[in-house]
Amino acid sequence: MARFSKRHAANRLRHSTQEPLAVPEAVKMLKGFQGAKFDETVEIAVRLGIDPRQGNQNIRGAFSLPHGIGKKVKVIAFVDGPAADEAKEAGAIEVGGAELAEKIEGGWLDFDVAIAHPSMMRFVGKLGKVLGPQGKMPTPKSGTVTTEVPSTVADFVAGKIEFRNDAGGIVHAPVGRRSFEEEKLSENIEAFIGHLAKMKPSATKGVYMKKVHIKSTMSPSVPIEFGS
Image (tube, rainbow, N blue to C red):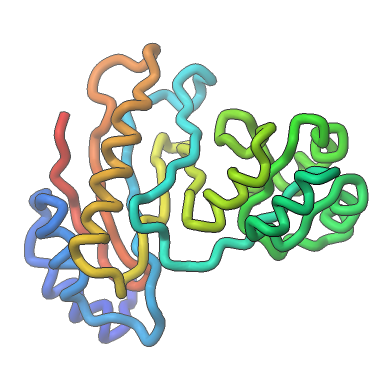
């Protein structure tokens, strides 16, 4: 039998409906739950009608939320020359090539996003076994392998997020903080759903977006009503 904290049990009692709610109403319900002692991250989970076993149906990308995610994102950049200085100025906490790759191989993983110039992939490629499981491996599909390293660093520092479906066909992503104003949180959620809807693979048949839920770190989930 599952055991819940008093706070979680009380929140479950407040969650009186399993019917999907319009985004503003869902956000209002979420913010009405008893909160934790820290500013919880608000996450979205979207169940997609894709077959994750098929490479041409997998979803992966990056998206700039209208109001960011409310936290400082630690970004590193594999780049050299003048662009390295520009990436540093844009907010990268570490820049470099071979020496940066060696630092990561040595166990340093205190960053959220890695950006790489294509010319640096000769150093980054060998980090697949380390960064892949962490979801931090730079890829062209997510926009983290790019010739525009400084501007991409700036985008991620400002709150651009990466996302991809898991083995069950579900996409999880942060969409803000519980302390956000309801309107800003709603706009982030609606923007992300709209972006994901546009990414439907041509190989996917039938219903693409099946279910959408939001929750904060310590709260029950709330179902979202979304368009076709």
